[in-house]
Image (tube, rainbow, N blue to C red; front, side, top):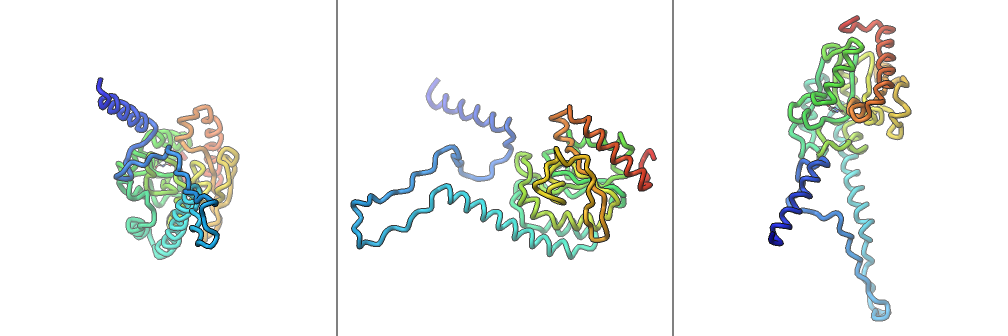
Length: 284
Ligand code: URA
């Protein structure tokens, strides 16, 4: 085999590995070798620099440059959160909220996503479920929780007498992050004003938070879902507190089936609260 053919095969194998690892989209036209060590900053030998000559400005070390780039991104996401706040405040119904989101340019992930994935289920339901972010299937179809984790979610809801007619479903972040990665805290923060308005407009009696992103967005980014699941909290909505239950995300349960036992305990706790509040469900 020629060297070129060898190289081609190696490139193809590397690409196959990246696809297996979740890469599904190219976000730049030129490849960036992120494994290459950063170039050494140029040093001016002290002995040759004449004392009276102006000294070259010290170069920012490459690691600092990376940190600055990241924080610029965070700064622009904070700016996006301010825009989101202004847009969301003007929305008096779900149609307006959806339109405001369609026009919101504050997040880079919308460029790699196919479409906005707004919500599913019944907007008049007493139960509102908040997930993390759309995955590949949701991005393609335009509805939350339609893939494998959605199928498990439907089974979990059915187990306590709920379905998509008795629940309203949305996500913390409404565009698919590339490669199905977890949304970053700054992306979640940028979307938060929309989520808060979404909850106000739906005005549910109970919130079910599946996964750490929803818990982090509405309560505390430091909170760990593994510790906080199953513990009821009050979400401080404008119209009054709404009981909210954090629980494991169905996608996590697919990867860790042994945790379904704890998820079942949380579902029973949710069912009990439905009964206490007299919320009608499919079975009850
Ligand atoms: N995971 C989520 O959190 N939301 C979806 O819509 C799909 C998968």
